[in-house]
Length: 304
Image 1 (cartoon, rainbow, N blue to C red):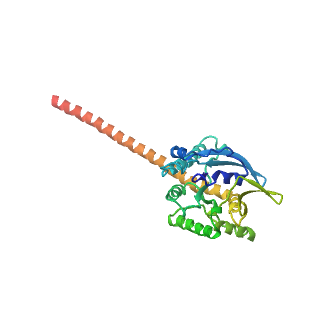
Image 2: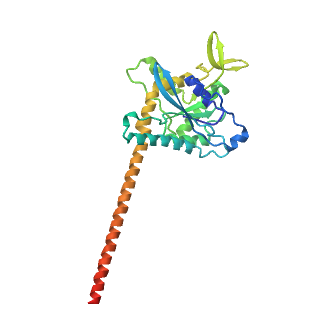
Image 3: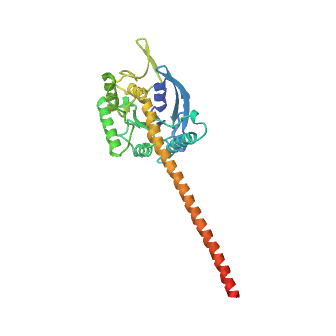
């Protein structure tokens, strides 16, 4: 799932990451249209291949998240969608056809943060705090080319401090196993230190020295979106490949399990409550019956 205000390159990053063209005719809303626009949730499923392994991937875009005048409660639409996927999985898991469960749970959420603001906005904090116990949040700092190298470092520090100060739990990249090679361990440390990932994305393709690249052209030159000196694009893609299974595992063992336990506790509470009501009703009925018997006995004594 990708979440963030319009114009931060959410759809473009998805196309760059998975080498697709999911949004070729994306409508650009005018200012007047944005006033009346409400948030939409648009899932698209595709099949990609990574390391000779075919993967069924669902991309969930959320246009309109931060467009209308009052968007303070838009996160509730996201929350409901994530819970609905948990509910579908829960029902399938407790159904008859458990072997062929379709897993449409949200395993990862890219939360896009504008590099033009001074850190997180109140809506960013509110949304992430509402969702962090439901999904693995990965913060993305969009349009990193709008900042100098020093500004980029400073902005990352500000965002991480705000995340910690507001007790927001983002996805924690796990450590490598002790028997992994040193190169992979070093790469993983770099991934951890790169959060939030500062991204440059582009739909335009240029040819440089016989090689086609996605890039952004400026008066002073061309930026390759995969150039690690300017963008964390490659690090983000590497993180997804290396830790895809971990994202799925955390979703199942922590986020979904929390939902499942609350669901079962609610069912137990409702059942106990129903039993309690039934018991009270039975006692009331018994009391009424005894009253009737007592009343009849009283009437008989009076007649005698």
